[in-house]
Image (tube, rainbow, N blue to C red; front, side, top):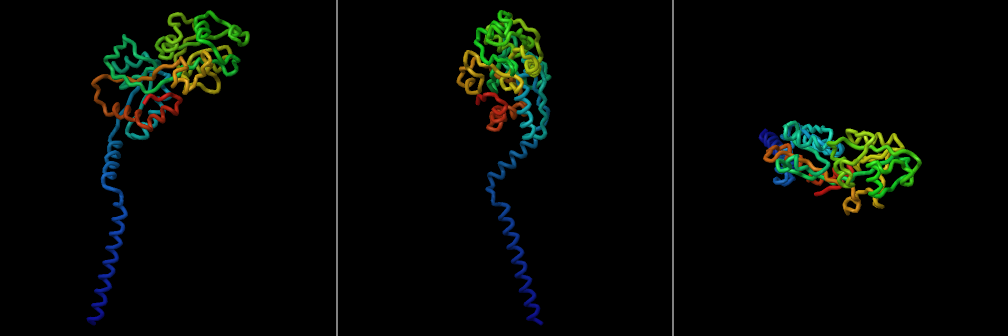
Length: 293
């Protein structure tokens, strides 16, 4: 009887040892990641989860595409955040930020003195080319700076004068508050001299109008060029990222964002940190803009 009891106790002890060894093996497997990395990952996850609220942007319509792309990626990284973009032109940017209706203002040009740039933090997020756009079926694929100036001031009114078809030129522009208009008219020195058949309120409208009218010409953000329009070369230089970087393509302007000086917002800080990150820079580049990191 003693032998039987002894055997049972021995067997139980062996089973207990095997079970503990098995648990030890599992614990070692789950703690194989070094502690510092795990702590950092947990801290980052907590920070990502904690950031919440609405990030509002207002201003340039030319920046709608890049802001939307950045906004979607930012929201994916911070699920508790909503990014909203609005505006009818760069002229809205400082007004909205000053009034408190937007945290960040978007301008597709440099700030003007009357916008009191000293009151804001200014961050350039990209460089954009301004495409001189014509219909995809227009035979004119190249213009000189002088020809562009004369077309937009009404001195040249027929495509025949620049090597195209015998057809009247429909000159399209943007509204007065547009950063694209400001950039274009400054570069080609035609401010207050332009003669537009129509002044449109967004980049998308210009693209649509030029794409549907074989006689039309307008100016749009380079990243907005699609298969219905073409960007003419200027003074023999093609509108391309490479030529914007080397500054041989003259029609280019900054994309900047502004916010009030002294603002202490975790949302704003996280937004600009994301833009500067490799991930954010990749998003900007993918939209067809030139990064400035």
